[in-house]
Image (tube, rainbow, N blue to C red):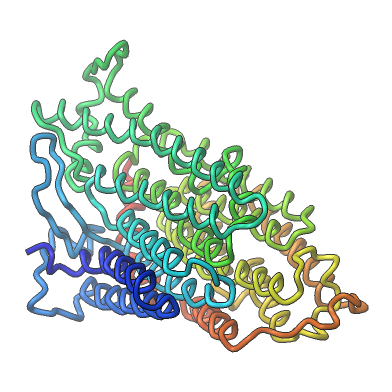
Length: 528
């Protein structure tokens, strides 16, 4: 039965604990809510590790039934779970994972666990509701990464909007309502446009099969990569075009939905507002996980569903990536608010994901995915640090934090390490990601790669400038009473720093998980 399969447990275990956490905290003991959330998110992380072991073939629990429909050596899916849902229109409950989604699932479960702990010092009101929304958000994110039916994918994708909207609107800063509504409007509108693309893919499958279409990503791969269909004419309402041209239209509909989520310039303006106003754990999940849904969508669409269209419009995708790198980095250089600076840096780093995807080779695609993993650890740490600084110093304005080292040496020390990691210092996860992505980019388009590389220089500049003002100089008299990080805050520091350093020194285990799928994608593009 599908309900005993491990991916279903990973997806819905947070939801089960979300309900338990809310009801127990609301009606029994509110103080227990955060500990139930820790147990729920921690247990989900453990189960996701078991899923990784099963994916690699090193763990087989006999009472968990799962079906391997695909060969990992050729980039196929494993741990596939399938249950009939609405056969009339070709919908099914279909989950599965590969080298693209499995690392993102592990990232999601770990960052959610760290974010729950990070919420302890800040979230003091309506705790059961906050932890309920956080765990509900985790279910939506994991579901988006493992759903192999496009309607199921869209349900999980949209599910993430609601809890984050309320997290920002209830526990956010002074302009939280404006930021929450802007986030929701931008991302929901983009999702609706993306949904039109999903329906279009179903239409093509129905034409190809001369009957009921399919929303299965597995089945759509064979249908959409069959160029024999491209010359046939398709009519939808007032549109009449070849299937080849229709695929190009669908490519841009889907791409729009994904780059708004990423986000990419010029559809990025919701992100700084959302980050600045969101509570610290909300910013950690937003930067560490939600942005990765957009990058995942681009890689899944371009590598699996519409590789010919990505090949045709690679310059467009790469140019958007370079524009995001340069714009995000230059605007970050002008920021006085530490949290806003980190938000704009995320736009630049996600531009590297687009550039790597546009390169259409194994190095570029691997670098794009590794950038999502590296940024998924680095950006939550940076946003947590900005929250710690705000909590202890009561300001995030960089010029007002001069000499903070005198009172908070551990906090500033971790800030320096995180800043260097984000700037791509060798020995840190960010360096591996940038080096791999740009290796693929230079092999594809030297001009765009050179332009994008300038963003790395600017990134180093704005982090060094920020650290210079915070670490050195005469201490601001207002900081006399500031204390260093608490024990709980040190736990979060350690949790995130460990992975940033390990992935920078020894990234092989993660890359080995990615490699079969990334090489498979690269082979597809090499044969176009």
